[in-house]
Every structure is written in C-alpha cells, then in structure tokens.
Image (tube, rainbow, N blue to C red; front, side):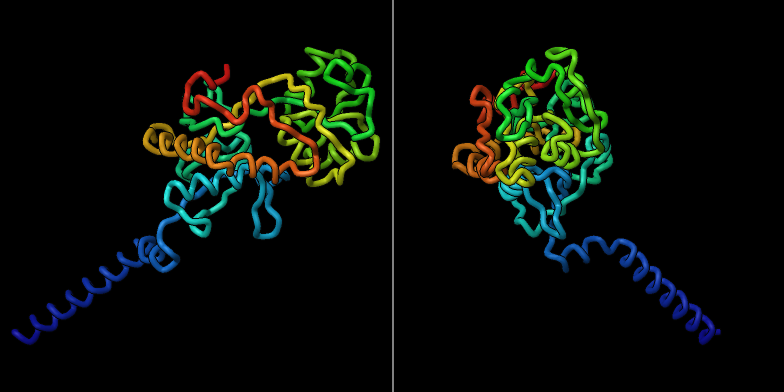
Length: 286
C-alpha cells in the first residue's frame, strides 16, 4: 500500500512539473523580451511617403521617422528598440486603441473628432495644402491659376476638391492611387499640378523630381501634425511634448526638415513653424 501511494505521489509531482513548464512557455513573452534586448516601443508611420515615412528594403527614412526616433530616445528607447509598423490613415485610431502601436507619427492632423478617441501630443509640424508644379512652369502661381488646368491628387483626398470648390471651379481633376503616380503624370506633362500637404509635396519632389519640380509656397490650409497615443496616456503626452520642444531648441528639428526636403527650395510656413504652444488644445481643428 505504501509503495502504491509513493508511486501516485511521484506521478502527481511529475504532472505538476509538466504543467508548470507549459505555463512558463505560454507566458514566454518576458523571457524572449530579455533575450532580444529588453523593452521595445512600437511606432506607427507611413511607409509610402518619400521624405516623411518611407520604407526601402528594411530601412525607414523621412521627417516623421526622424521625429519618432528623437522622441523615442527621449522616452528611453534606442533606435534598435523601435519596432516600425505601417499606419494607413484609416487605421491609425484602431492601431492605438487596440494597443498594436504605442504612438503614431504619420502626418496625423490633430482635430477634435480624432481627439475624442485618441490623445495628441504636439504639433511637431504645421503643414498646409499647397501645389507642386514643374520647375519651369510660370503660369501656375497659386490655386486660382489652376482654373482650366489638370490637377492630380490621390483617390479619396479632399485637397484637389478643395481647390475646385474654393478657388478654381474649372479645374480638371485626375485621381491616382498614390502620389508617386501623380508625380509621374506631372513629369510627363499628363497633368499640370499636384496638390496635398506642402511637406508631402516637398518630400516627393526631393525623392522623385531630380530638380524638375517645385512647391509653389502658396499655402491655403492649416494642418497641425500631432503624435497620437492611446486615450488617457496623459503622462506620455507630456513627455512627448517636452521631447518635441527639445528637438526644436537643439536644432534637430530644422536639420530633419532640411534633410527631408533637400534640393526643392521648400521652406516651412514661417507663420506656424517651428510650432509654438506645443500641447495647447487650440491646435485641434474642427
């Protein structure tokens, strides 16, 4: 009887040991985290916007990437502790709400509707809708001069329609799936101009124009770019705001803008850039 009880106890102990090991394997996130360098921060960016957020092979570049990297460093993360995640415009709120990303730095205009579901730090840049033309074009000097001209923007964008509705009713609109296609059409003469946010246009001109394109510098809207975080992360917002202020003060902000728009002659709208009153709710658009 005693021998049988001993065997039973040994069997129970063996089962318990197996269960414990299985439980540890199921919870292996922390152990794998320590083996791959510890903590990570996941940042949502655009990956198809040259000069802002662009992925080529395994490398990421652009102004948004530089801002995100600087902010992450101030938050205590090195460059190799950053996990980049594509954040398409329509998915940005969802990615933050479900915790897929820790923050979004992706030409994310701060507005009141979005601020109901996510929190914003910033702005780190204030863009404006503008116009991209061929460098030798003399006839297009602003949005009103687009009357009768062919204007390209991406499907679903409001910028081209704004031009038609507000400035030049006879503008001929052409939609393309992406801005790279618009730039190709502009360089070939298929369209006369491209419109979207000025820094996006400058990035496209720098990456694809080879000196053949210019941003007019006639802004006709205000687009404050913020860094989105999950709703309720007040402390994180404060830290990010402080990091943005540091980036502007130490010259890193200007260096990043210059690098992203090199060779285009682009100058940020001096009325708003570099931004002031960072963290002020007055930046939220209607």
